[in-house]
Length: 79
Image 1 (cartoon, rainbow, N blue to C red):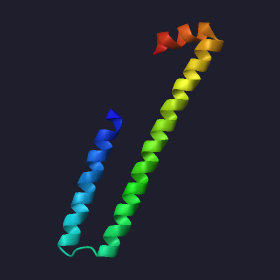
Image 2 (cartoon, one colour):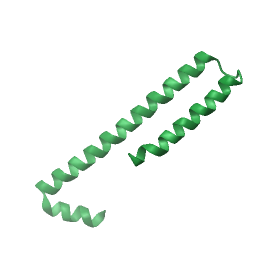
Image 3 (tube, rainbow, N blue to C red):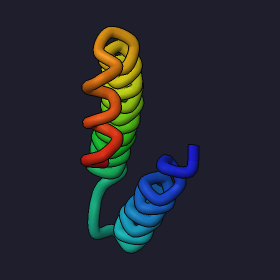
Image 4 (cartoon, helix red, strand yellow):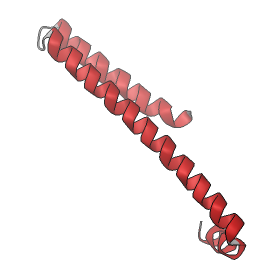
């Protein structure tokens, strides 16, 4: 979960900035809601994408190492 920490910090900072804009009357309540909703949706989508990508890489690597041990040696050398 360490990979989530920095994007989560960034998300919190952006929401905080939007809160300041809302408090100062520079954006409306509706605009604030829409932007926060959009930010959160993008955050979740990106985190899910990263998790799926990581899992696929691990599964593919395991598959190749089991099916083609010689390739596993080659892959470990180029890593």
